[in-house]
Amino acid sequence: MTRTRESVVLLPVPDVESLVCDARSRYDPSAAAGVPAHLTLVYPFCPAPVPDDIVAELAALVRAVDAFSLRFERTGRFPDTLYLAPEPATQIIRLTEAIVNRWPAWQPYGGIYGAIVPHLTIADRQPDDALLQRLAATIELGLPLETQIHDAWLMESDDAGRWHRREAFPLRA
Image (cartoon, rainbow, N blue to C red; front, side, top):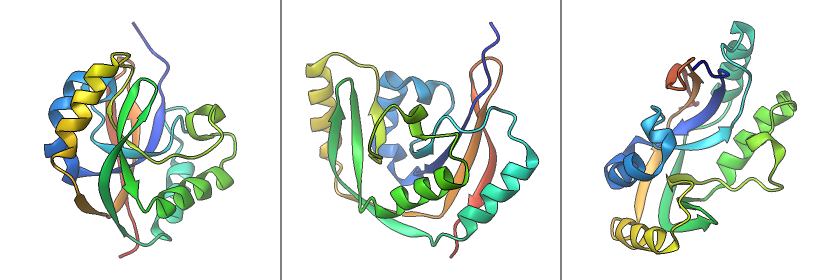
């Protein structure tokens, strides 16, 4: 089955992989599709394949942002989702807003949510509240966790729905 190709702009967070890898591989469909542990900036972004001029402009926009530190001290919940909450979230929100200001047609999550809530998904589309509570308790044993954000990625999906990194954009050192 051929799917509509999509793209996403995200911040990879490799330092949390060891903490969330098992849960993500079992309970987050994006992990099985090839998406690493991350903080989403804009999804969906431009339909894939993203034109080279947009890639170049996105690279320049990201290069203007300083690399930054984050701390994960707690989990959070949406109704069927468990996530790590990054603190402070200010830089993530600013970078998302900069992308959206440049390309207003591509709003985070299609514009269905009013506020930008940065989060690193651990389990998604899981209606079992008890499962999410158990996962949260297990994950929280590994917190707090600090990390540096050094780059943003543009990922694109292929015709089979698998995700691949198209570009890595370094933030300003």
